[in-house]
Structure formats: C-alpha cells, structure tokens
Length: 265
Image 1 (tube, rainbow, N blue to C red):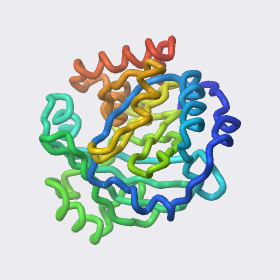
Image 2 (image 1 turned 135 degrees about the vertical axis):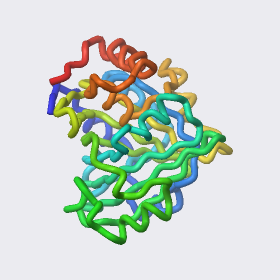
Image 3 (image 1 turned 180 degrees about the vertical axis):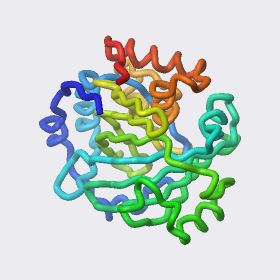
C-alpha cells in the first residue's frame, strides 16, 4: 500500500501513564456517542502533551503504546451500507472483520447507528484466518443474521484498512479516545489503494453524560469536529464508479489538513 514518512510519537507517548486492557474492562462503551476530529501528526504531538498534563493514560498492549489494526469491510454488490451513509440515512449498519494484531484477537463486528446518533457495536470472536472472509464459518454467519439486517451470502469483502491506533483513557475512566494514524486502504473490487499520509483521525467515545476535558483540549488547539468514516473515505478514494459526491468534500478537507494531495495507485 502507499506509504509516507511519519513523525515519531513514541517519546511523547512515554510521558503518559499506562493502562492495561483488563483495567479498561469497565469502559468498553459499546453503546456510545462518538465525536470525530481530523488533524495531522504535528498537531497530534501537542494534543498528546496536553493529555499527559491532564492525567490521561495510554493503553499498553504487549508492551506497546501503539497498536496495529487490520480491518476488512463487507458490503452488498450494490454497496448498500456505503450508500446508506452517503444518503444520510440515520439508521444504518456496517459489517467488518477486525484483527487486533498486538493482542492476537480477531472479531466479526457489526456497528449499528440509531436515529439518536448513538452507536452500538456487537462482535463475536472468529479465527484470524477468517479476517479476509468469514462466510464459511456457520457460527459467524448465524451471529451476523441475528444482529444485523444482512445475510452472509449477500455480502463480500470490499475494503481492507490498516492503521496504527493509540487509545487514551481519562483519569475518571468515563471516556476513551482513539487516535488513528498511518491509515492505508486497499479496495478488493477495483484493485486501487491509497493512504491518508500524515492525517490523523481522533474519535472521542463517551456515553454523553460526562464532562470531557479532551473536548476542551481539542477546542483550545483549534482541532474541529468532523463527521468522517474510514470506510466511506476509503471507498471514495478507491472506487471511481461509486457515487461519492458528498464525501469528496471530506477528501478535500483531509488534503487541506495535511497540505498535500492524496495519491491513488
């Protein structure tokens, strides 16, 4: 996949106190409100420094403060899940498999958004060998049918996404912040691939009732909220035949943020 040079985040991350997966059990936030933000790696260093000063802790898995994620998004032949999002349907779903490479876990995940803006995620463990295609797993197919609108036979793999993730937790453990960098995309149907270069997608996950110091940090740093979907941006970039008008504005926002043109190969 396409690559670019990146700023080292490790020295700054070393200033944050660690938190383990077991300590995070009480803040999974599977039923949550998500707020997303777009920035670049240079600004991320400043945000991380502010987070350290505010007492945020960083998830450490296998001794690492940065985790590698590999996801495969599924859709119908007509890209119903993509177009539900593009056409602003409030109630929608996404289906993906995801490997958390640092922990070695792989899941089939169903994300469901309701008309109140809340996101619920259901997932079931699957063998890592099924990341690229779970449809021969009868139990996984039954799980999909029980928790989504879709049957396995109407879906196929569309996109692979790979990225590095940093996860922060606030001192009172009422919110999680996921920070995705080095995002790379590959479209199985078109063969095109690309990366977001030095762009950073930050996602604040909370139940909506608790105050958020991170929102204040991002506001002070003039990092503005933006509605962005990795799946939809990736498909916009890699599928010239798809109707992507609304998401092209998001692509231009990313290019403005990083000061560079995104390259598709």
